[in-house]
Image (cartoon, rainbow, N blue to C red; front, side, top):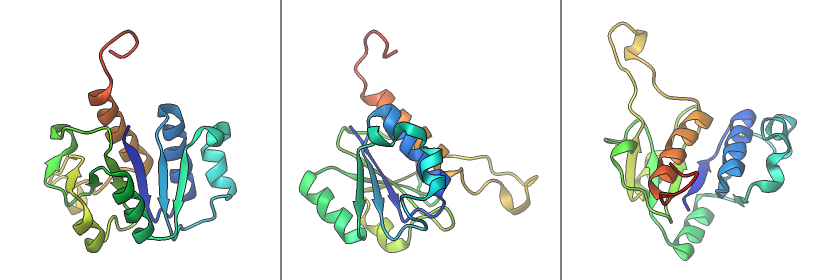
Length: 163
């Protein structure tokens, strides 16, 4: 099933909430250092509640370490970015995809985006009525949930409890 990758996350409660989503869906969570906090941070643990034992958690010392593991295990690197041209809803997800999400403040750097096999976006309203042209991004935990649940919806076989 798809793996969730957070590239250098900075806000402890976001990572805790993503961990809770990974626990609820039995998906791996990969954290690429440096993190903006200690994984033992009270806010991370609080947001993840008592679900941390159910999170298949992998920590990587840097981007290169994550890339080495991904290459060894296979699968496409699917980046999510405001710079993506295709909507995540128009993408056919695969079981071995690595869903890559960037830092809360500035997303994914160009060099990391260049490593992605595909770059998708979550469409958002853009209008002249909003200062700056609209909403720039969703909360990291919300973005992960939206994309992960779409991937799982596509990959779940039809049957009782899966419709």
